[in-house]
Image (cartoon, rainbow, N blue to C red; front, side, top):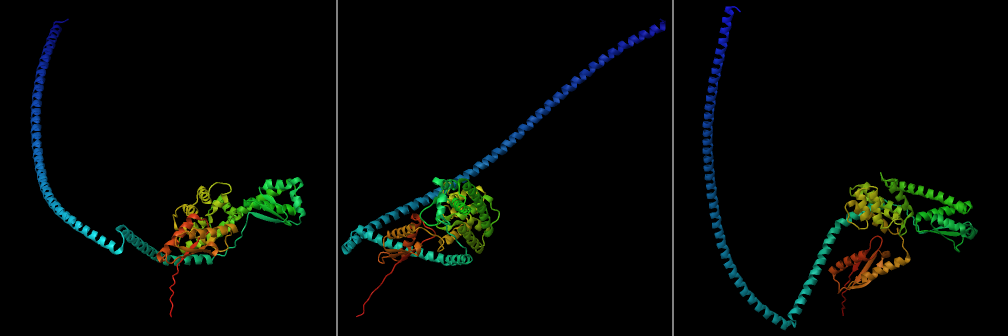
Length: 504
C-alpha cells in the first residue's frame, strides 16, 4: 500500500472515533434537557392542580353558603306560617268554646221547656182520656188509623190522576196507530185440529185399508207415525197425530192410496215417500211465499223452511203461519207510523213464534227455542229481542220489540182468531171470578166478553173511589201472576152509592 493511502486511512480512522465521541456527548446533553423539561412540566401540572383544587373548594363553600341562606329563609317562612295557623286555631277554639257554652245554655233551656211540655202533655192526656173515655194507646191507634186511611186515599187519588194524565196522550196515539193498522189488514185464517178426516167412496174400503190381519194399517202407521182411527162413522176414516206435518203426510198418502186402489205394504211405502217429498217441498214454498208477501229480504234458508213449517202448526185453533204474517203486517204498519225500522219490525214479527215448530223435537219453551235458532242463523239483535221479549220473559231493548208484542196481542185477541176447548173456557172463567172475589170489599164478580173482561162490584161503604182504582190494579196484577190466557183481560171495578129520601 502506498504511504499516502496509509495516511488517509489513519486520518479516516481517527475521524470516526471523534464522531462517535461527539454523538455520545450530544445524546447525554439531549437526555438532560428532556429530564429538565419533564420536571418543569410536572411542576406546572402540580401547580395547576393545586389552583383547581383551591377554586373548587371556594365554589363549594359559596354554594354551601347560598343553600344555608335559602334554608334559613324557608325555615323562617314556615315558622311564620305555623305561628299564624296557631293563632287561627286558638281563635277557632275560643269560638267553639263560646258556641259550646251557648249550646249548653240552650240545651238546658230546652230540657226545662221539655219538662214543662211533658207536664202539660200529661195533663192534656189525662183530660182527653176523661173526656173521650179512651186510653192513650187507643187514642194513638185511632189517630194512626185515620192518618193511614187519609194517606191511602190521597195516594190512590194521586195515582189515579197521574194515570189519567199519562193515558190522555198515549191512548189517543196508540188507538190511532192500531186503528190504521187493523183497518188495512183483512187476512183469512184457517183453523186446524189434531185430526184429519178422510172421505171414503164406501165402507168396503175400510177393510182394504186394514188389510189381511191388519198388515196394511200397521205398515201405514209405522211408515207415517200417525194413528188411523176406523170406527162406525160411515164413509170416513180419521188420521190422528200430534205432529201436524206427519198428520198431513198421512192424510195425503191415504187419499192417494184410496184413489189408486192398490193398497199393500210396498205401495204404501212408495206413496208415503212421494207424499213426504211433496210436503217438504210445499213447506219450503210456503216459507218463501210468506217471506215474499211480508217483503222481508235476506233470510237464511233454514229459517225460511221453519217459517213454512208454521203452516202446519196451530195455537188456540189459530194457524201460526197466518198469525205470524198478520203480526208482521201489523208491526210493519205501526213501525211506519212511528218512523221506525219497518224491515226489522216485520222480521221480528214473522219470527216471534218460530220456536213453536221446534217444540216437538227439542226441550224448552218456544221462546227459548226461537232465540236459539235465531242466534244460530245470525239474526239481528233486535229480532232476537223481539222473540225473547214478546211474552215479557226479558226486558224490551227497543221500541220495535214493543211494537211486535202489541201486534201479537192484537192478532191473538181479535174476536174469532182463536178457539179453546169448552172445559178450558169454563175453567178460566171460573178462576177469574174466584180470584177477583177473594179481595176484601168485593160483593159480586162477573166475567164477560168471553173472559176478556172482569167486572167487579164492590161495597160502597168498604171501598171508596181511591181504593177502587187501587183494587183494579191489584186484581190485574194477580191475574197476570196466577192465570194463563191469550190476549189481555180488562178489569173494571164498579162502585155505586145511592141516597134515598122520601117527601111526605
